[in-house]
Amino acid sequence: MDAVRRLLPELSTSLRKGNCGRMGVIGGSMEYTGAPYFAAISMLKVGADLSHVFSPPDAAPVIKSYSPELIVHPNLVPGSWLQRLDSLLVGPGLGREEKSMDVARESILEAQRIDCPLVVDAVGHPLSLIFELSAAAAAASQQSQHKPIILTPNAVEMDRLAQKVLQAATLGRPLDEIKEIASKVAGLLNMHIFVKGPIDMFAAADGSVRLFDTEGTPRRPGGIGDCLSGVLTVFALWAHRSNEPLSTAAEAASFFVRECSRRAYKEIGRGMTATDVIAQVAPLVKHID
Image 1 (cartoon, rainbow, N blue to C red):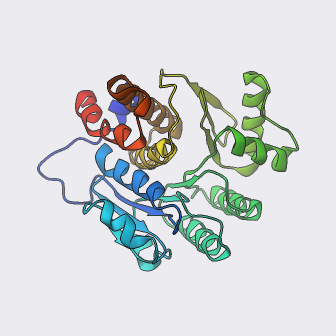
Image 2 (image 1 turned 180 degrees about the vertical axis):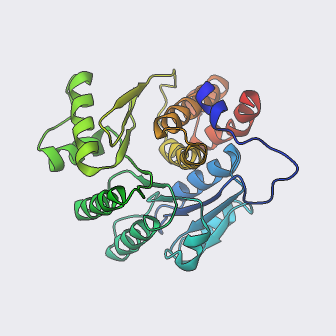
């Protein structure tokens, strides 16, 4: 809870719309319209001011119908909008069509050229894209312009990534061995990795690793990972602005979403869904604030 409290921007009457964050989500597809919505609405509920969703034309009207509070663009390409965003999340519900992957690639690389923390949801993107992003991160780091890049794989996706980068599996290994592998992968890629699991793990690009084991829930409905990605993208921005380490943003996001899930499960039980978790976001912010 303290990590969340340290990151919350101080509110005052002098603030203007956008001061607490202009967020962007690139994602969605005809089949997956819920994922970008869950991420984008979580951004607003946790305290960001504006939330833009860039989605394919066949998905945008559906996403727009979920909430009038989201700004939904019927195009995966942010274009000039990217320069106006403070933090960007790429990937929720994006699918694996070649055109979508091309857009993701260009947007990710462009975000690296501006002062924009970047979260890449899961690692469903081609490995070539991850390596290209890694090279861009290394170049920016050498110029003292390194921007935060966070990958958010689940346990299975982390296993695939580790096998491709290190030829080392993580599934079924003891926690200490997984920590060591995650540390090496993050260092080699020059990116931060937030591994979602029974115990969340944050492996920083400098090789340090932290574990977060706040009590959560035995329920695993779809969409909670998207909520986490959205909240993490906001907290990464606030950490970036306040010179807090990204590990603080990771700690805050892990605690926050686990606590929202715990509260939703306590109230609803087995029938809890991601929508119920989102309903706990604003009340929890108020409680912490």
